[in-house]
Length: 369
Ligand code: G6P
Image 1 (spheres, rainbow, N blue to C red):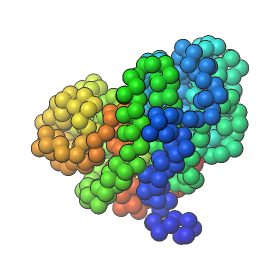
Image 2: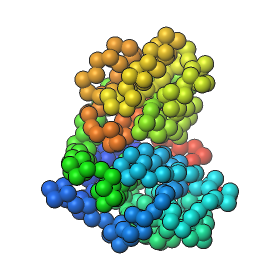
Image 3: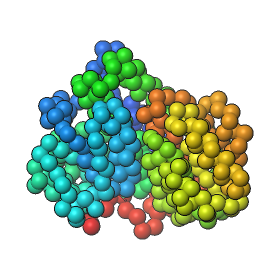
Image 4: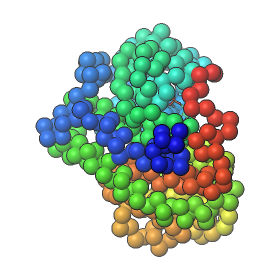
């Protein structure tokens, strides 16, 4: 096992550090940036079906559901298609309205999640075209779906999902870009620029990983907190949910993710000098609004950990700590803002002496309802 961990203390840490190469592996062979080409068999073979879709319904569980939420923002922005994201377990039990021209995208790292599988069968029965995004090759879900694309993240052993999440977002971005280019919902020059920017993401993830030691110090400061709040807006709202989920899963600290603007409708009541609040406040996503949320947290003495774009000075002045990530195109920021949140939960769990790779009560793949 020590050999499999490749010198890292835990599989989770190894998998966090594998993200630059896992993301490259996901797009390698599928995009040629110089000629502006995206080639994906599962998409190319079913292009008419996908281009004629009136709606996309995404079904998934857990972290994969969070990737689906990020994809909702990406598809709506780039492809201008309505998207619904559903917990597979809810979808399957409520007689959902599905039309023949709906495309259902099922996302699953393991490809074995029982609820997702049941939701796929239901969607197929109702006549929808079902596309799978799985990591495990030959898994049940990859066989049950009409077509699909693998994330190629390599085996993910740690129960808390990390590289599966970022590679799911990568593949969903590629799909959205391909459809957007074909439908003409983005300009040619934007298409080329976005491909270049996607190609630069692995290098930028490496830069984000360089904050590891700094994050360790922050983890040490807050490891005994009883609650954490995570806030983000737009593309980074699902990242806030994912950051909170990571902390809950492996450190057993209660954490909630919230859209930053909803803070005033509830969570603000919880803020006092004992409450660490992780705020994703990158330059492009409603930055000024998020800065005012930070001011509100500060005036209630909450402890602020800001995830900011390199060179930010406004949040730095207000926050107790900031963690910088490189700048990128807005729809790609989740691939970077996720990294410090993974590391924060990892270090807290290690400091609290928890079983990071196999947290209590959780399983890597949930094959029962
Ligand atoms: C379990 C795992 C999570 C995962 C979820 C969905 O709860 O512990 O990490 O996100 O199942 O799994 P899937 O394999 O379908 O992505």
